[in-house]
Image (cartoon, rainbow, N blue to C red; front, side):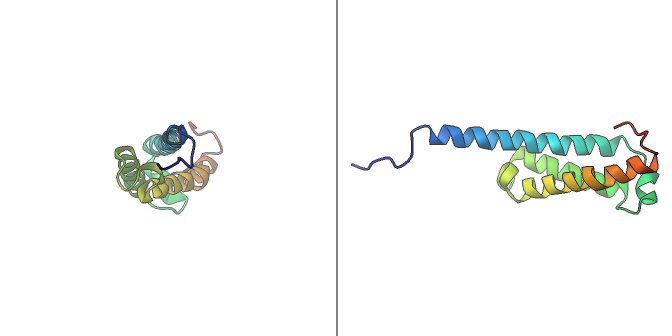
Length: 107
């Protein structure tokens, strides 16, 4: 008879952590998508980054693939790329767009 080396609730805790990471990942990606949609397209060219369409495509595709669980969900390749793209957008591009409007942007 084999003995259990981990507590019985290990799978429950692991699933709860995975769900928490997935929800946090989707929230960060959704905020980036919503912000990108609400911005003017000419602002992206003014700060010297990718065009609005490219950012929107990257963010939406990664969000959908993370939501569907393709490639392992939030901890898979698409989830990690999606979070990285969303954080780059929020921490770099969003700040550039805010500076362009003198900090009086919507977000």
